[in-house]
Amino acid sequence: MDHFLYRDGVLHAEDVPVPEIAAAVGTPFYVYSTATLLRHFRLFDEALEGTDHLVCYAMKAASNQAILKTLAQAGAGMDVVSGGEYLRAKAAGVPGDRIVFSGVGKTAAEIRLALEGGIRQFNVESEPEMEVLNATALSMGVIAPITIRVNPDVDAKTHAKIATGKSENKFGIPISRALDVYAMAAGLPGLDVIGIDVHIGSQLTELEPYELAYQKVAELTEMLRAEGHDIRRLDLGGGLGIPYARDNQAPPLPSEYGALVKRTLGHLDCEIEIEPGRLIAGNAGLMVSEVIYVKSGEDRDFLIIDGAMNDLIRPAMYDAYHDIVPVVEPDAGIEQAKYDIVGPVCESGDTFAKARVMPPVASGELVAFRSAGAYGAVMSSEYNSRPLIPEVLVHEDQFEVIRARPTFDEMINRDTIPSWL
Ligand SMILES: *Cc1c(COP(=O)(O)O)cnc(C)c1O
Image (cartoon, rainbow, N blue to C red):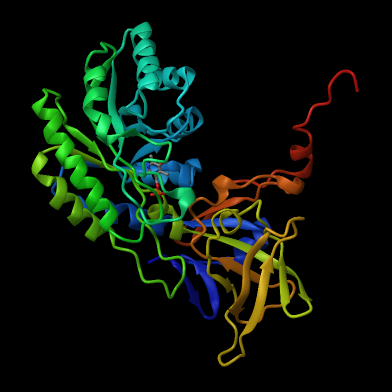
C-alpha cells in the first residue's frame, strides 16, 4: 500500500497534486511519501513485536538524509555499506549505536571512521577484514563488536545480480567454515564476537529461501554456543520483495516474514536485527517525467520522455519492470495505446519499457514511474551531462525539495583543467 492515489483524476502524493510539484521543481524528479515510508517501517517493527529487535533500514536503497531522519525518528537504525553512508547517517542524526556496518570491502579508514563515531556492530565478511578490524581497534584502544556474515549457500530465487547467498557469490564466509572462523575471531583481543549475520539477496518473492537460511543460522547458533561463543544477536539481513507490477502475485507480507523469523529463531533468545531497504523505500517513491515527443516508428510508437537511464537505471541494469502511469487520469473508456518508453540518452539500453500498453499520453503530459523509491535516485548519474534530478519529500499537504537539481554551471564547474592546458 502506498499514498500515491488519484483524486479527481489527478495523481496525488499524499495530499499534494503531483502536477503542483512538477510546476515547482521541473521534471524529471523523485517524490517520496512520508506516510508510506513510516507505514512500511512500522509493518516490520510490528512484525517482530514481542522480540527484542531493531529494524536497521538498509540506507543504500534511498539515502537522502530527510528519509533517514524520518525513519530514525520513528525508531529505525541504519545498515550502512560505506564510510560515506556511515557519515550520512550520522549527519542525519542517527546515533552510532543504531548503525550496523555491512559490506565485503571495508577499508581501514572506513573502519576507523566508524570506531571513532560509534557503531552498533560490524558485520564482518572475511578473515582478512577481521584482522584489519582487530588491528585498527587495538591501535585505538577500543574493542569492536562484530557479527560474522555467513553465506548459507541458499538460492534466493531472485535476479542473478541481486542474489548474494549462494556459494559463488562474494558475500560472507561459507557456513561450512564458520566454526573455524569464529574460533579465530575469539582469539583476536580487539573483537567482541556477539552474533551471526546473514543476507541472501534482494527482491525475494518467496519465504522458502529465508526459511532454509534461518534454519541454518539456528543450527549454527547452537553449535557456536556449544563451543563457548556468547551468540546473542542475529542480524537477518533484508531482501523482502515488493510488487512492481499491479498484476504481480504479491510477495509475502512483513507480518508473514516476522512470523517465520519467530518460528525459526525465536527459541534462541537472541536479539533480532533485520535490514530491509527496498520494502521500506520502494513503493514510497515515484519518478515523475514529462513526455517530450511521441514518435512513430516503423512498427511501434516511441514515447520519448525527459527521464532517462541515468536517472533510473533499474530497467537497463536488472531488466526491472516499473508501472508507468499518466499523472492525469484519462477519460473513462479511452482506447489504450502501446509504446516503447525511452529516454533521451544515446544508448538503446535507455529503454524503460517495450510494447507497454497504457492510456495514450501526449507531448507535455506527465507520467509517473511507480515503485521507484528504492535503488532509484541513489543509483543515478550525470551520464550525458544530465544533472542529477531533484528529490522531493511530501508530508500530508506539504512538500519540500530535499535535494535540489544542480545548475548546469554547478555540474560543469566540478571539472578542473590541469595546468598544462
Ligand atoms: C542491500 C542490502 C540490504 C537490503 O536489501 P533490500 O532488498 O533492499 O531489502 C540489507 N542488507 C545488506 C547487507 C545489503 O547489502
